[in-house]
Image 1 (cartoon, rainbow, N blue to C red):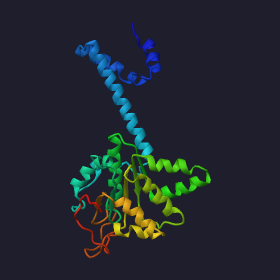
Image 2: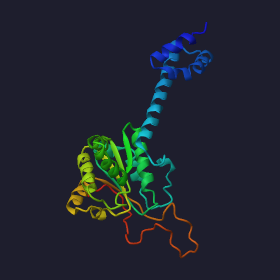
Image 3: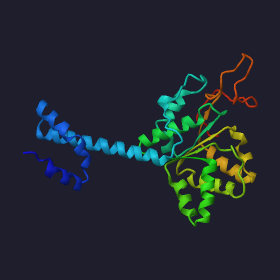
Image 4: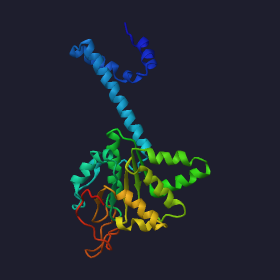
Length: 268
C-alpha cells in the first residue's frame, strides 16, 4: 500500500512539503542500504533543514540588493599583488560585525572595491547576518523621497537597523541640501551599534570635503573612522583596456595620490 496520497496533505499541513522532493529517493536508498526507521527519519529531516537553509540564504541575498553576485572565491588576488589578502580573509570571518566597527575600502576606480564589499556582504549573510547593499546617492535619494510619502522614519529605520549596511561609491557625487544631515544621522545612529562598509574613490582624509557643512562632515567621518578596518587598493583597473603602446597608461589609474601598501586595523 502506497502511503503517499495520505502523507502528502499531512506534510503540507505541517509545512513540510519540501520533504516531498526527496522522500521517494530517500525511501529507495533506505531499502537498498537497510536503514532503520530512525535513520530514515533523520535523513529526511536533514534534507528539510538543508532546503530551508538554502531558501533563507537565497531570500537574504535577494533582500541585500547586491549589484552583482560577487564572492571572494571569484576575486583575483593576483591581479593587484599589493592587496593584503590575509586582511580580506580575516574580514570575511565577520568578526568586525561582532566588534560593531566599520570597514573603509578606498582606491582608484576598477580595482575591486565594490567586489570586495559585496563579497564581505555574502560572507555575512552566510554567517546569519542581515545585509543591505546600496550606493550613497541611492540611499540619500530614498531617504529624501520618503519624506514626500510620510515614510521617512520607516525608511531611516531600515538603514539604521540592518546588521551590515554597505554604502558604495561615497564621494562620487557631492552631497547637496539636506543630504549631509541624512548621511550623518545614519552613521551616527549606527555608530558602535552596527557595522558599516563604505567604499570610495577618495582617500579617507578627503572625505570631509564631500560635505557642504565641514563641521558635520568631520563629525561623521570621525565616527566612521573610529576603530575601523582600512582596505587600501592600488594598481590598475580590472576594467582598463590593454594599452596600445608600452608608454600608454591604463585608464582609472590614480596618479595624484600614492597609497600605502600597508593594510592594518587602525584606530584612525
